[in-house]
Image (cartoon, rainbow, N blue to C red; front, top):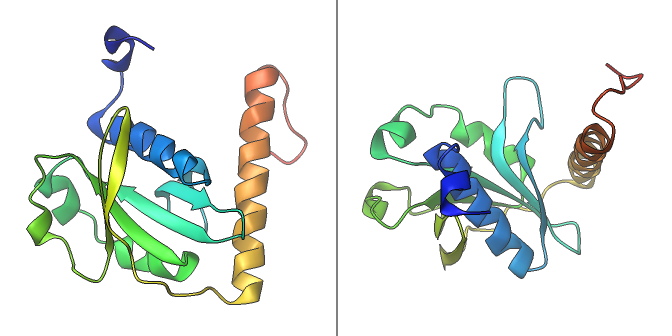
Length: 152
């Protein structure tokens, strides 16, 4: 993908792209804009080899962060929570009890590990199933855009 191709993406989408690349380098697979429960949509959910679940919220500006009133609701859907921001973001304003990733469209770096809050087994099973079915539906839509899945 060229620099010109990336111009059609919003800043938050570019952060999600780089964050997903970073997560892949740590052995995670990711799904962007995943809905774990009605009324919630996480920017990036990452699933590790041992079913660890991380949620990463991408914030392209301080105003974007301040307008996000739902982020605490994501904590009950993951083992670790992170913010992904660009290098110009005032990171000292982010909550200290959350993880921090600095990223761009091409990758990133974990600056601060989010504290671990292990999910209950039943919640983990539900999140992993949602993750898998969302990924499978998206892959099917890419492979056969004209097909209408039975579950819609």
